Amino acid sequence: MVRKPIKSFIILPLLIILTTATTGAVYAQNAEKIKLKHGSHREGKRTDAIMQKWRGNGLGQFIHWGLYAIPGGEWNGKQYNGAAEWIRSWNEMPKPAYDSLIYKFNPVNFNADQWAAIAKDMGARYVTITTKHHDGFCLWPSKYTSYTVANSPWKKDIMKPLVDAYDKAGIDVILYFSIMDWNHPGWRYDIKTRADSIAFEGFKKFTRNQLIELLTMYPKAKGLWFDGTWDKSWIKQAKFADELEAEMRKLRPGLIIGSRFRADEYGKRHFDSNNVLMGDYEQGWERKLPNTIADVHGNDWDCVMTIPENQWGYNKAWKGHIKTSTELIEMTAKAVSLGGNFVLNFGPKGDGSIRDQEKRLALEIGDWMKVNNEAIYNCGYSGLEKQDWGYSTKKTGIDKIYMVVFNIPVSGAYRVKLPAKTAIAKSYLLADQNQVLKVEEVHTNEYFVYANAANQRKPFVIVLETKKKERSGENNYDKAKT
Ligand code: EAT
Image 1 (spheres, rainbow, N blue to C red):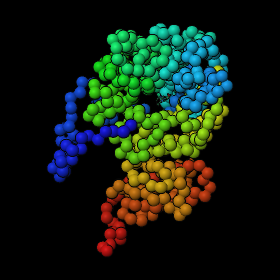
Image 2 (image 1 turned 45 degrees about the vertical axis):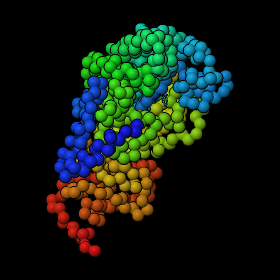
Image 3 (image 1 turned 120 degrees about the horizontal axis):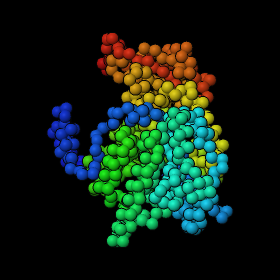
Image 4 (image 1 turned 120 degrees about the vertical axis):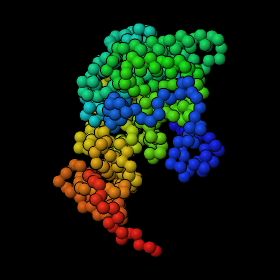
């Protein structure tokens, strides 16, 4: 998500004039604000307990499951090159054949408790599950369409056992919902004629009904993850979407909604025309991570990631680079170090089982998390300068910093720069708290922490317990005049 710079030809002179005043930036911003009916309704992060819990989750699981899992990226012996969950849009795929997959949906090996156990063992603290992807097939028995599990050979609700199993395992559930729906006769990419408009009005009612239905049927769900909201038809629905959001929030106080749901009245998505985030967290990080804290604009966010390059639904043939557990752990640590959550996608097979590679990766990540989750859960941006050895995270409300090491320095010295008037009280390995590490102040507030990492085969964590420095400026040796 790239933010458009706010008209710098106005801001710049203002900033120059006001630069000496501490409130300069605020004045400059206010001068720019335009009145929006359907823009953001909040500035800054939510402060309630539900959002604090979400923010501290660190690691999540994504589940993409639907009819697309049955062909698994293959039709008539041919491989589809795109993402498996998009196979219906392939020229080689006859639409009626795809839509008839409903009569083949019979996942005899589906076991909700097993899925939840895999997520739990991995260390995930929330899960986002596709209730309905772009194809329109509903994993719950919606009253508003016949294209649901109820009319498949399986007949039973999939969402209820999943919500219950994950909830029982202590994992929060977020409902993924695609607004774009290839199965609904009223769906349009744009609205150009009166007929389009009438059709789309029907689609809007349907969408509203399905969302209210989901929130009513699964009251344990903590939030909604929207997708398929980029087409002109939906972007034009600022008023409708704003009102629907209000209705959903009233029905489920504390509901978490990402920035992908609605556009403002000027068609701006994610960030409104005043560049303020819409929704509770930024949802623009699909298969990519921010690089610096500036990239996240002080907002909550999560990154959703695939294990292969771009496959969400089950694909029999995983091509290209398959991420390793070490890479995925590094992405998790990086996300947390920049104040976000990392959500790793799983694409179960058509029969309901989960592929071995995914299970193995989940176990490997889980093995690491069991030792190191203190550096991930309830942690966020440390405020420290990024160093080459890896990523630092800070425990919320506690004077502890975690150095998650991915690159081991040959010197054995790990550089740390602390804010003024802060000192290191103690440093040790998270995996072995008896191994107290030698700390040397090499410049004012700049330290070397020494760790012998010869035996490390996996990323590891160094803990820094920090304290207030009694006297500042005690070491003046680095201030010599030249
Ligand atoms: O199918 C993917 C997957 O569900 C991901 C979370 N979002 C969907 C999606 N649809 C897209 C259309 C255009 C470009 C990127 C897309 N990602």
